[in-house]
Structure formats: C-alpha cells, structure tokens
Image: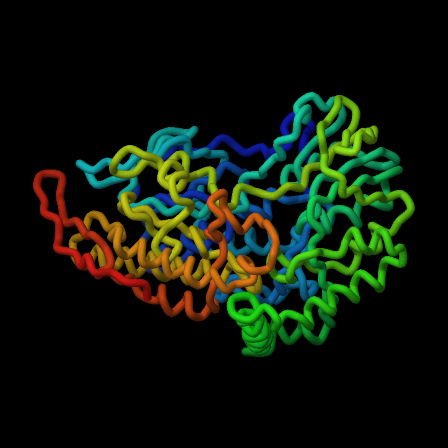
Length: 522
C-alpha cells in the first residue's frame, strides 16, 4: 500500500507535462470511467483526447481507498471491463490492491497513458456559446475542448461529519478514504464514526491491534455472509487458457445478480430469504442479547445498501470493542461526548461517513450556457440528468455515473461501459451531421426523471423505512437505477439524437437544427 505522510494524506503526483491548448474530448477522472472512455476513444480512432486526474495514477476510488481490509463487494469476474478480462484474480471478491493493479495493467497494455495527465485538478469549466467549446481551467493550465466528459463519479470526495468540536480534536484524525498509514494504531484507544461499507471492512482489521475500539453507530446495517474464497489452481488455469471459461463464469454471475432486481424495485418481500440469512449472520457471531439487539436493523433489508462480511460481527463481539448507539453530542480535544453525557477518551478518531453522492463536487465547477453551475441547478430540484449522462443547459457535457445510475446489486463497470457506448454514438452522429453541440431537450430530461421517480415509489429504497445516502435533501432517490442493468444498456445502445437540441453553428455563422420537443421516457 502507498505510504502517506500525516501532513498530507493524499498521494503525491509528479508535476504534469504541458497540457495541450485544445483537444476534441477532455475526460476528467482516471478511474474505471475515464480509463474505459480513453480506451474506447482510441479503438474508435479518436486520438484527439486528453484525460486529467488529480491523483498520481489510474485507479480512481481504488487508488485512493487504501484502508485496511479494503475490498470489493461485487464478484471479481463481474468487476472488470468486459473487453479486458483478468485471469489473475486470486479470489472471488477482489481486494483493493488487486483492483488497482488490474487497472494499472489495463492502462499500460492499452497504450493510452501518453494522453493522461496526473496531478491536475479541474478548477473551472465554462461553456462558450460563441465558439461552441468548453474552456477548462486546471491547476496546470487552460484547455479548450469541444466535448467534456466527467468520470469522477459519486465516490470521489469524502464527506466529513458536521460534529461540534471535531476541528479541535488534537489526536490523529482521518477519513477512511484518506487513510493515514503513518499512524500506528497498535495499543491505541480508537473511535470510528460510521458503520457503512468501509467501516465494516476496517473494524475487523484494526480491532485485534488497538487497546480499545469505540464504534459509533447511527443506524445498524444489514450484513450478509461474504461468500468469498480463493480460486483454485485449476480455475485460474481455466481463466487463463481455456476459451470462454472465464466468460461463462462472468455470465452466470451477471444473471444471478439480476434476479435480485424484482426484490429491490417491485416486491421487497422477495428479499425475505436474504433477511433471514443476515439475521443468521448475527446469531452465529454474537451471543450477547444486548449487542445483538443493537446491531439488528429496524428497517426492511435493501432499503440501505446491503453489506457483506464474515468478520464484522465477530469483531464487534470482542471484549475490547464497544458499539455505541447514543448520538455524538460533540468532540473534545481528547475524546467523544455522547448525548447521554458520557465522555470517552480516544487517541485516534477515524471517520467512515461516506461520500458526496447526491451532490457531486465537480458539479460546482461546471458552468453551463446561462452561467450557472450544474451544482446550482441541482440545488433547486435535486441531481437530475437525461439517461444519467447528459444535462439540459450544458451542451456537449457527458457524465459517466451521473444521476440514477448507481446499483445496489451488480457491477458499476457494466453501467459505465453502457454510457461509454452512448457517448461514442453521440460523437459519431455529431461528426456525421456536422453538429457542433448537443444537449437534451428540457422535455426529454423531465420525462426521463419523472419516470425514474415514478418507479422509485414502490422500490424498497423508498418504502423500506430507512434514511439512506441514496436520498437527497428533497427525499428523492437520485442515486440508484430502478431497473435491470440490461434495460439500461438497451436504452443507451444508440444515441437518440431526436431527444436533443442539435446545433450546427460555426464560429462565423450558424443555425440551430429543428428538434423534436415531444420527448418521453424510453
């Protein structure tokens, strides 16, 4: 794992090479989305592109999240590019170092790294209506691009809790997504705030090292057993040398995961067997009735993200671990005070409170035709886009992993590849038609999002009796996709230009092509 200093827990990056003044396509982010986009642009013969990323290598969230126990909760065979299978996965669920190494290997073999610039932060992107381009100001200079693709996703910026006194804590403090590997937790009194996906992986890893661990739980998650195992030598040989063997594994896992969809979006009662399995996971590890009651959720399984672990509950049952459900009132310079008045002294405070998922930070740096940022637009009615990819008022802006593209059951890589296909189709049609700019009609975008929210009404995320990071401040689920992933792929197979305002304007003169204002959700 990367070693980071306590003063700067972010990875250091080599100063970027000179940025070109102008490119056809500028891609922001070098995770699965940005790397996949670059590879497919190259394969399509579109070499006039640039990818910028604030980190020091490809990998995105799998580069930045190096906390102990970091691993994927989607099976390895499904969590990779369909066009770049990895025969070297060691386990059925991949640990973070293997996923990062996989992305680095794919990047090297693809031959696109010469168009990546690392250590570059996008500070401002403004649409120039006159020249029909994006002017993008970065920490390394200004780039003009005809098309802007954002691939920074919803898990890029850690979200710190708003707790009184937290800035005055004098011990070690860091977010799981910015883990400080210089801090030795051995024999320390440690508190961790949060019991989400990252926390349940961290807790078992550090519980045996620390003197005492306080786990501050606001809402107990449902945790299923993690059916993880090392691949056998025969399996690994098959993945590498037997044609279609790995593809058959991937296909079987994919369709198995799709069977979960009806329980999430139509009939939550279908998830009852999963609930029974999760309850059994608690009983197997925890004998103390009081602790078992604390960690048993009071909402329908699936309402919040379902987690998987075989080690989380046994870690909570250790004598040196305490689960605290009284809310935090304040943080003192040396400890945590709960609402019941109790004070617990700690040496280190670990924050595991997730990311800005319904208010993506990059949206506050992108200014559309009317000068407002995408963040300003979303602040009015919530995060919204057309097909999770484009936005009215923001010409030639394509988002990968935009509104309502997240999943609760399968691999985001599948969704990313579907969006890449859609963007490539858009570029092809723009070139063929001499089109300088495209943006979805307001009617098309409104109809799409109305359909999303209509489908959400009966989904477990809305009816399951919980408050989750899936929902924004308006109570709308603008995060998840409420259908099957193959439905999403079919809807994005071809760029539906009839739902767009198209502009054939040149810098000297121009006209706006007629558009179909009657636009409904597909």
